[in-house]
Image (tube, rainbow, N blue to C red; front, side, top):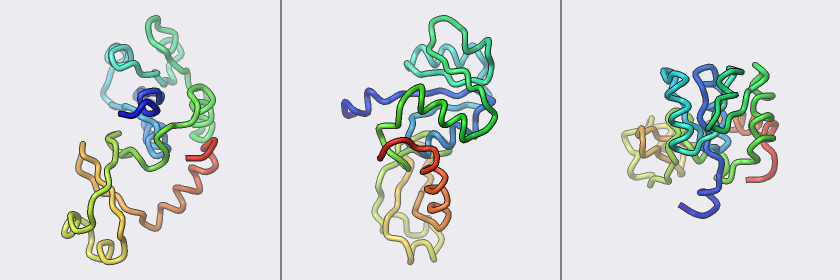
Length: 159
């Protein structure tokens, strides 16, 4: 892990913030999320892994021994702005984490995805990334431009 990555903010989102967790991952934030985790488990994980707790629960955000951010808004764009204002921009850059499981994406040779992606995708795409944690394969599909446009409105600085 590089020095830059070791200084990157590490987050954990409570059960009410699954959508926010997914978009923070797309932006490049290391964001842990488990929709079955109870408050005590979240606090323990945040302490053990030096993560900042993101929560919509006012009382949970005030617990001692853990850094927490009480997410004020229900609006996704406002939530992202609040997180970025509190922790700064992500150091890793966009599309570096799996939006499903938070694994760090790795480049994978095109030959290694043959038969694992739709034939049209294999024929039309040259670059692929794989999540070593869950095995999902990603490529720049047509919806990526729409996602990039949304991320541009929420992202501060360049990645």
